[in-house]
Image 1 (cartoon, rainbow, N blue to C red):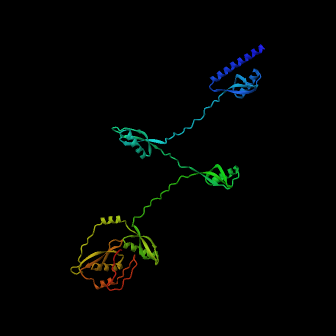
Image 2: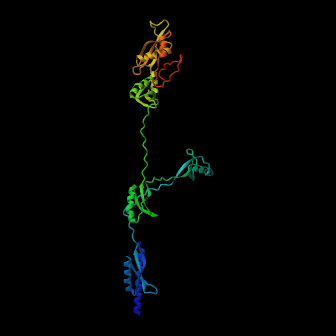
Image 3: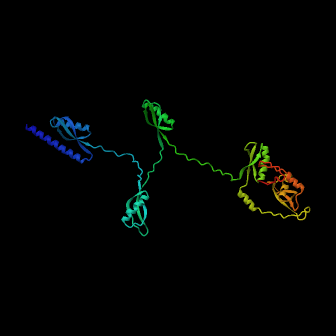
Length: 405
């Protein structure tokens, strides 16, 4: 009996010393922790050693030599020291995040001159409101070179980038299962120039596939090339009366252009019934005409005496507009002479072969002869750009040539 008591005391001292050593080792280890593991029945110290070491192996730890029995039971509990798992450092470098931009910024608002704190408490909130901000209760006093300032906090509006994609739900008929959706939705997304988001839904026996479609950036319209319009009034259409065909236009339009000091552009068109037509005439710009007239010097012709004229008569040349030939001169010059209370000397000449501008030679000092009076009355004037109206039959009514109109 004494031997059994002595043996039990020795076992308790050994276990107690082992437990103290294990606890000390656990305290010295910064990466270890002690846990209590149930081991089942323990009958003696030899059986406890076997059970505790088996439990420590299961927990990947080490038995510290301590064990005890659960009160009222033969089951034992072993104390096991388990090392904490060591967290391995990441092998890759962390991704650098852009710095967070502040949502507010501080500005200094000129406040003129602030006398004291009470003056700042009254003036600075007003300036902050004008700048859509909030006064931070800070202000500065006026110096010789700088005025007083109020510090205002202004919110910065976040810059939201425009969306690059949009989400759409496209009708897909009836989808029976997820495998059916994987076959059908990618084709529907391809037809709509998008990508399937692997989501689909069914409602009221109607299925739809969710797709993501890229938003195309708006295309800025390209301005059409600037085409300089012709000078205002340089080209216009002039009424030409009736023109039947191109041959008649080739004869009539150059006459109209010459009478109006212009050039025919070889274009004409019909505008109404009875073959009413217009000719396209090109004229020089007004600035160029003024420049030409400014450079020209006026020519003054002195009156000349002729042997055939009576004493007191004078002969001079009068502008007659465009004259093409002798036949037209025979009709035009007597009319011009009658308008000037003179008579035509049967002489005329062209000043320009390009525009057919001509002059008629007239003499004054004697009354027009009977032949001239007859010529004036019986001469028929041909109107090119105006529709003639017959004058009423009267002895004192006649048509007088008016030149270009």
